[in-house]
Image 1: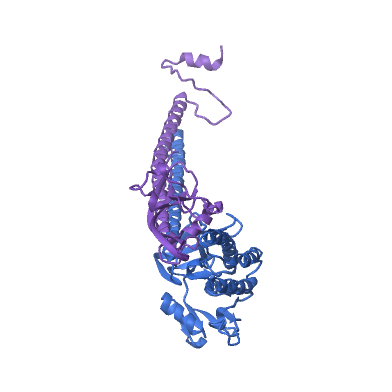
Image 2: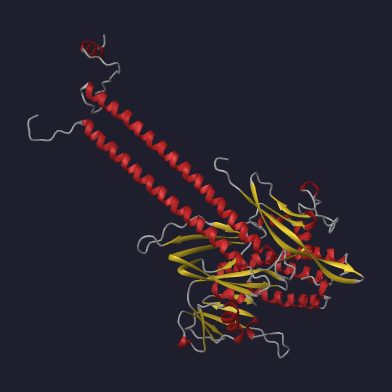
Length: 327
Length: 202
């Protein structure tokens, strides 16, 4: 060697360094993958546990129930709904992710499907505190419980007393405040009967009975306006329309109608069973007409007609002797 | 004789591992260096194999834990569902924790409900079928024809390989006719729901 001060690095040293770096990179990649997979598995497990937490919200005899889920970190819940898959009941999926470093969220966990719940929420809900409440959906018998998940603060302006009583006293939901005017409001504003552009969501009731006591409030049925989208509702679907994204609302409404059809078949079988015990029922023809209409429901606008028809069935059922009532 | 072979014969400490001389690539000219590279390559392969084995071992432990955890979550879901099942629209008789047997008969004929609940099997056992009254082999399955003279309502069974069941007591009511009067007759019953258990490696 001419320059004796030069450091001699043999080929095998270079080779060893190169191989070492490759092995180290592979090990780092593997470790990262394991951590990510572990995180994803943990998020998927959390999603499955959230579904279990929704079971106690089954209303039973109560008209509604409420609950809260608190997380230590900022959390995102992703909801998806499909009325076509898993026919006739459709399906919803839930996935979960939480804040990891700084403002970043971890990769969302696997989507856990569920078929027997009707969860109304935004497609992505973010927060540490998730407010959940359930309301039964009757048409005219109980079809399912509507589970509503929300994270924001809401302010209901000009809401009728029945709705205020239902939310504050019966359900005990704390993130929904009631006010007489928009000035006293914070959070997402929901205006009842007002056209103001300052309202985030507007509710227009269309129940007018002309003094025949068919309506508890004008908001028994009507529409919820969210910008360009109008969602039509009856009874407890009002809450679903307010708190849910239009896509999830429409999808779940279709799922509910499909479930109504399956339940109607069960009730038609029950009619045959109780006829053996001397219980006659005139409900079947009307129920079949309602089933047909529910099957062909193309938009939420048609739900109001269906609910009115369901009221007639309810009248027939109430006229039957109590032991022989269908529901 | 080939030139390469002549050189090898000349060397005193001859090694059995043949070193190829390929002048197309930049390889050390010394056969000792080439040998070291070969040794290192073998060593690297060994190290890599070791890491793969350790990885596989860790993965098998992790996977077993994952299966266990998935089973626990599934069972938890079954438990929370079954305690509220009597209040579901398909079952409820209008009272808390009460099942309408007249509805269950209709439900049994609707196979679509297999896709509705997460249970692998679901049945309702009437008090007449309880172990102190009757063996499982003697249970009479309810059908629209023999109802209510039967023991068990088999709502559905997916016939899974491994299953663990959880049960919950409920009131089971049906409409009865006696002395020209209709009334609701209730008895105790047991809802039995199965959860499919995944076994790692199966």
